[in-house]
Image (cartoon, rainbow, N blue to C red; front, side):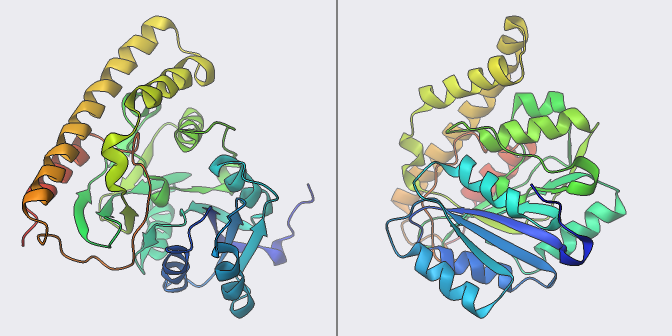
Length: 305
């Protein structure tokens, strides 16, 4: 692959996989256009959509040269779409944003300043949750710092908040697996650096599909074990140790979400709009650390009518 010359570079490349997201992609792009930092490019890799998603992205690309549509020939999954966008990225920093999520206007500015001030190669942050109609579901407060060992126990990094510096790490790609590919990337980064730091202030909106409560927990658990054994090459004893932590965090997440779903069934008008449209995505495996569990559960239980 040909190297990118300095005069062709930009500060941040936004990596966005897209598949049948016609309902949400416009709002996602608008949230990037609203950033207070203007030196960015957004690469939307359309993963074989059969709806109007490519046309919507193309219409934005004709109006703003910072937006690029990459069309894949067939549906190959989010990992392949993200990697295709990473290959074309010209930015020093790579930031990730899925096609149904949103950034708040100062997200890039605050995160770039945070990384510069602390000389970080990788950072992440807290985020708000909204449902498919844009109503608030509370806030996930992430851990202020993580290590490789702590990340093995539970993933505190929401993909929509993650950003890494290619000058410090080079270009890193995601493994070709159906689930947890972003988690494996964060683990690979934490192997290179001693510690990563997170911004406690929520700077993004993560869209949750209510059907996530009925997702295949056994399948996700199997993938988690696969990550430990095949990608991290942990011993069986290590796998059991970290898997117990993973299950405990997962049970706490599941119970909290079930409790909130029950609360919503009793208070259907109790959610306040939080901006944007909605999304359809499973949050399995993305629940933050213990801080997030406490803050998220508190926020969900105290949402006012």
